[in-house]
Image (cartoon, rainbow, N blue to C red; front, top):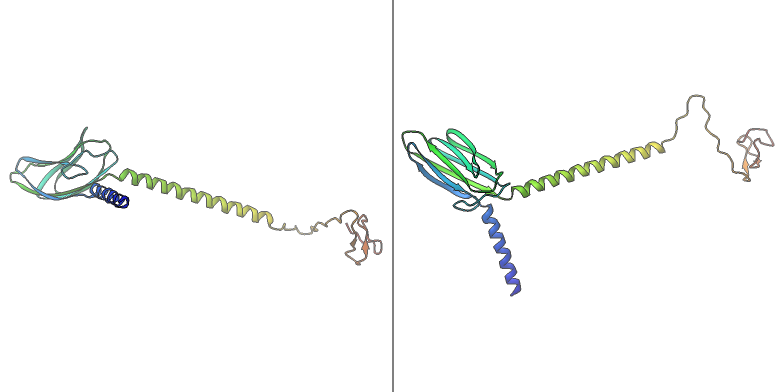
Length: 203
């Protein structure tokens, strides 16, 4: 019984989200001569308030030239010159009720076909895009730092190149440790600076 309730709740949530994301179906109307036709647009059929941050996307076409005005709580949002068709996406900056109004300045009636969609998830999508860009930037910075560290470590480990005529440094034999003469191979005391046999300098 509990499982059935959970499934019903999930299905209900999915249907609600789908209803929010589903655009209004295409509709037709007639704009009388020297008159206008206006509709309330919103996330649901028949309008409703549009939340700040949402995107309003629309398209329309007509048999004659019309002027379109999109208005909101504070007045005109966008105005489009006389045309037979148009499409646009408007970012909503203020929560409230919005209208699309077509005006027919001609002497004959004009048929109109329009469609619109309100995307209430635009703010979430913008936030996700910003987070994704921040993550990509952080990864790039980390990779650059790692490359620089590896480069510096390898550069320090690189053997020093001797200048022309420069002799390589002779490692000193620790005190009290016997060694051998590099010239004749005789045993040499660790304290000695010269080979007792051939006199060669050992350190």
